[in-house]
Length: 139
Picture (tube, rainbow, N blue to C red):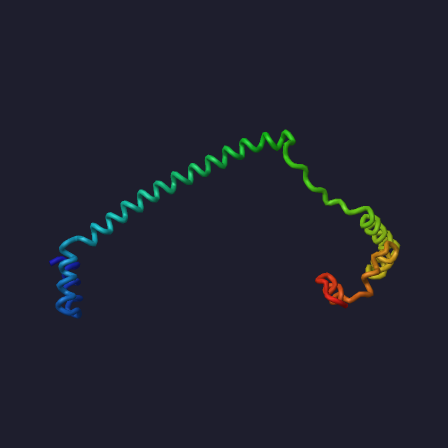
Protein backbone atom coordinates (compact mmCIF):
# COMPACT_ATOMS: atom_id res chain seq x y z
CA UNK A 1 0.00 0.00 0.00
CA UNK A 2 1.11 3.52 -0.79
CA UNK A 3 0.94 6.23 1.88
CA UNK A 4 -2.00 7.76 0.01
CA UNK A 5 -4.15 4.62 0.04
CA UNK A 6 -3.15 3.86 3.64
CA UNK A 7 -4.38 7.32 4.69
CA UNK A 8 -7.52 6.79 2.59
CA UNK A 9 -8.24 3.45 4.30
CA UNK A 10 -7.78 4.95 7.77
CA UNK A 11 -10.27 7.73 7.06
CA UNK A 12 -12.82 5.25 5.75
CA UNK A 13 -13.07 3.72 9.24
CA UNK A 14 -15.21 6.70 10.30
CA UNK A 15 -17.60 6.32 7.37
CA UNK A 16 -20.44 3.90 7.06
CA UNK A 17 -20.05 0.74 4.96
CA UNK A 18 -22.07 2.15 2.02
CA UNK A 19 -20.16 5.43 1.94
CA UNK A 20 -16.87 3.60 2.18
CA UNK A 21 -17.79 1.40 -0.79
CA UNK A 22 -18.86 4.40 -2.86
CA UNK A 23 -15.59 6.18 -2.19
CA UNK A 24 -13.61 3.10 -3.08
CA UNK A 25 -15.59 2.69 -6.29
CA UNK A 26 -15.07 6.33 -7.24
CA UNK A 27 -11.34 6.11 -6.51
CA UNK A 28 -11.01 3.04 -8.73
CA UNK A 29 -13.10 4.34 -11.63
CA UNK A 30 -11.13 7.58 -12.11
CA UNK A 31 -14.41 9.28 -13.06
CA UNK A 32 -13.51 12.32 -11.03
CA UNK A 33 -10.17 12.65 -12.80
CA UNK A 34 -11.87 12.37 -16.18
CA UNK A 35 -14.39 15.03 -15.23
CA UNK A 36 -11.67 17.31 -13.93
CA UNK A 37 -9.58 16.87 -17.11
CA UNK A 38 -12.62 17.60 -19.27
CA UNK A 39 -13.32 20.90 -17.54
CA UNK A 40 -9.63 21.80 -17.40
CA UNK A 41 -9.37 21.44 -21.18
CA UNK A 42 -12.49 23.56 -21.60
CA UNK A 43 -10.99 26.25 -19.38
CA UNK A 44 -7.81 26.28 -21.49
CA UNK A 45 -9.87 26.75 -24.66
CA UNK A 46 -11.84 29.54 -22.98
CA UNK A 47 -8.61 31.21 -21.87
CA UNK A 48 -7.19 31.11 -25.39
CA UNK A 49 -10.42 32.53 -26.85
CA UNK A 50 -10.53 35.27 -24.24
CA UNK A 51 -6.92 36.32 -24.86
CA UNK A 52 -7.56 36.39 -28.60
CA UNK A 53 -10.67 38.54 -28.18
CA UNK A 54 -8.74 40.96 -25.93
CA UNK A 55 -6.02 41.31 -28.57
CA UNK A 56 -8.67 42.06 -31.21
CA UNK A 57 -10.24 44.70 -28.99
CA UNK A 58 -6.85 46.32 -28.39
CA UNK A 59 -6.10 46.35 -32.12
CA UNK A 60 -9.47 47.98 -32.85
CA UNK A 61 -8.82 50.66 -30.25
CA UNK A 62 -5.37 51.38 -31.66
CA UNK A 63 -6.83 51.66 -35.16
CA UNK A 64 -9.59 53.98 -33.98
CA UNK A 65 -7.08 56.18 -32.14
CA UNK A 66 -4.85 56.41 -35.19
CA UNK A 67 -7.84 57.32 -37.36
CA UNK A 68 -9.15 59.92 -34.92
CA UNK A 69 -5.84 61.78 -34.47
CA UNK A 70 -5.63 63.15 -38.02
CA UNK A 71 -9.30 64.11 -37.90
CA UNK A 72 -8.87 66.21 -34.78
CA UNK A 73 -5.82 67.98 -36.19
CA UNK A 74 -7.84 69.06 -39.24
CA UNK A 75 -10.29 70.94 -37.07
CA UNK A 76 -13.35 68.83 -37.86
CA UNK A 77 -13.98 68.50 -34.15
CA UNK A 78 -16.98 70.27 -32.63
CA UNK A 79 -16.11 73.69 -31.21
CA UNK A 80 -15.56 73.72 -27.48
CA UNK A 81 -17.90 75.63 -25.24
CA UNK A 82 -16.43 78.76 -23.78
CA UNK A 83 -16.73 79.37 -20.09
CA UNK A 84 -17.04 83.12 -20.50
CA UNK A 85 -19.15 84.96 -17.99
CA UNK A 86 -21.96 87.22 -19.07
CA UNK A 87 -20.85 90.86 -19.37
CA UNK A 88 -22.77 91.87 -16.25
CA UNK A 89 -21.20 89.13 -14.12
CA UNK A 90 -17.80 90.02 -15.53
CA UNK A 91 -18.29 93.65 -14.52
CA UNK A 92 -19.53 92.53 -11.11
CA UNK A 93 -16.43 90.37 -10.56
CA UNK A 94 -14.18 93.18 -11.70
CA UNK A 95 -15.87 95.64 -9.33
CA UNK A 96 -15.59 93.20 -6.43
CA UNK A 97 -11.85 92.81 -7.07
CA UNK A 98 -11.42 96.60 -7.22
CA UNK A 99 -13.19 96.99 -3.88
CA UNK A 100 -11.00 94.28 -2.34
CA UNK A 101 -7.87 96.05 -3.61
CA UNK A 102 -8.98 99.29 -1.94
CA UNK A 103 -8.96 97.48 1.41
CA UNK A 104 -12.60 96.56 2.02
CA UNK A 105 -13.17 93.25 3.78
CA UNK A 106 -14.65 90.49 1.58
CA UNK A 107 -18.16 90.63 3.04
CA UNK A 108 -18.53 94.39 2.58
CA UNK A 109 -16.99 94.30 -0.89
CA UNK A 110 -19.42 91.57 -1.94
CA UNK A 111 -22.52 93.37 -0.61
CA UNK A 112 -21.42 96.65 -2.20
CA UNK A 113 -20.75 95.05 -5.59
CA UNK A 114 -24.03 93.13 -5.44
CA UNK A 115 -25.94 96.31 -4.58
CA UNK A 116 -24.30 98.27 -7.42
CA UNK A 117 -25.27 95.67 -10.04
CA UNK A 118 -28.77 94.94 -8.71
CA UNK A 119 -27.98 91.46 -7.49
CA UNK A 120 -29.02 92.19 -3.93
CA UNK A 121 -32.78 91.94 -4.43
CA UNK A 122 -32.67 88.23 -3.46
CA UNK A 123 -30.85 88.98 -0.20
CA UNK A 124 -34.04 89.85 1.69
CA UNK A 125 -35.86 86.66 0.67
CA UNK A 126 -35.14 83.60 2.82
CA UNK A 127 -33.69 80.50 1.22
CA UNK A 128 -36.79 78.49 2.20
CA UNK A 129 -39.07 80.92 0.37
CA UNK A 130 -36.83 80.79 -2.70
CA UNK A 131 -37.06 77.00 -2.79
CA UNK A 132 -40.84 77.14 -2.30
CA UNK A 133 -41.14 79.60 -5.19
CA UNK A 134 -38.98 77.38 -7.35
CA UNK A 135 -41.47 74.52 -6.86
CA UNK A 136 -44.47 76.79 -7.42
CA UNK A 137 -45.72 76.78 -3.85
CA UNK A 138 -47.45 79.90 -2.50
CA UNK A 139 -45.39 82.08 -0.16
